[in-house]
Length: 372
Length: 129
Image 1 (cartoon, each protein chain N blue to C red):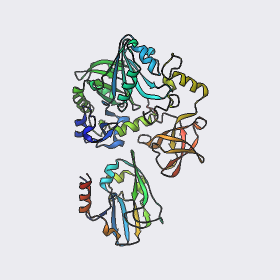
Image 2 (cartoon, rainbow over the protein chains, first blue to last red; image 1 turned 120 degrees about the horizontal axis):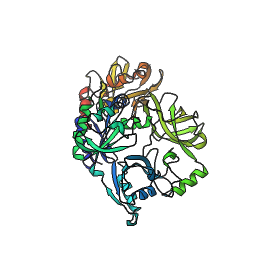
Image 3 (cartoon, rainbow over the protein chains, first blue to last red; image 1 turned 90 degrees about the vertical axis):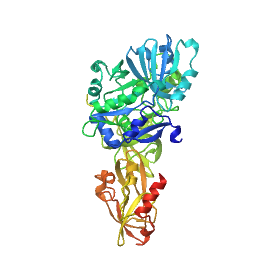
């Protein structure tokens, strides 16, 4: 796809002005890194603050008296457990229990939910959700992906930075809760969520205010390498989420991977009543999982990458879904699927890195957990 | 704008060569390190390994990608830069000095003459933009 055909977020020019190196990410023209580079951006987020443009994510409103029941029928988590101002992580599943997409479900009110889905899958999700929707569901669907910019401020200094720009008391917003408020005078949804393993906020606002908010976060956060906020590209977003062992759709999750296999049993509420794929998931759970997602750490020099084959002895038994150097941990880590009988902490494995079988060991996840 | 020293020869795969008698020092160019991003690991050959022209002799890994490195000229490895894996950022910060990778004893000391000059390499980069 040529650059002209790529979709652009309202921050496209801001990324270019900051020296962002732009790449095609699922049809979006997005910065993979800025001038500080992926390690500098990653470390800034762990030790100070990182700023992320996630405006490419998709947003879908579900409005009406049937909203909760409808979303509960399509997703794995129990939407009835949400209270107003709370969000949860969930998955859209197909009839075989595979994951159509992972998403956040926000409850604004009993009859008003917002689904936030992945950028590259927004159209697929919209088609999936609307194809399972009828007038009898008692709710209306609106694809509002173009109505929002979304900016994430993440890291130990994130709360202080956002707090300087709002009268909303951020300390009153618990993790995975949100509120509607004003940030720098811009009407926003302020959500204590993120994809980095750090504390922080994701701020949703009308796209025309994106650049104003972005620049305000940079200036308020003391933009710079000396303990200030840094804009972070997709590369740092990936290494941050991988250190925290968070799934990335298309890697740990896919149409042929169930949430149980991917270690997402905690969002798969099989007791809540029927939902798409729930029968298949119950059968899988009863029969026992054949494969499981594990975290591993390389125990000799070399870096496993996405797609590398995994061996136990001479037998090829699995594959790496995500592999990378971990800039904060200064180790080479990854996630891989293994047959359940080998998915144990301490299991020694070999990873085929361009023809060399390098040693690695299955370790607990998350690899990184922030000190509270 | 990439830094392209005049005293070196360049390959189309973005390696540089410094010839001194029958010895060639090899590394990757400023353009190559910039394209790769933060370098974290270099897989090196061993002293005594022999390579023909344009053979993969190792790889450079950045956080987000891996790139094989090729011999622009044929020869035997007589020295590798062991310190570069302690400070792989040298490849980014100082690709033509501290970030050198291997020294080869050239099979044919004239071979590097066929590689690009700094002017030719600059034109090559401009044309591939």
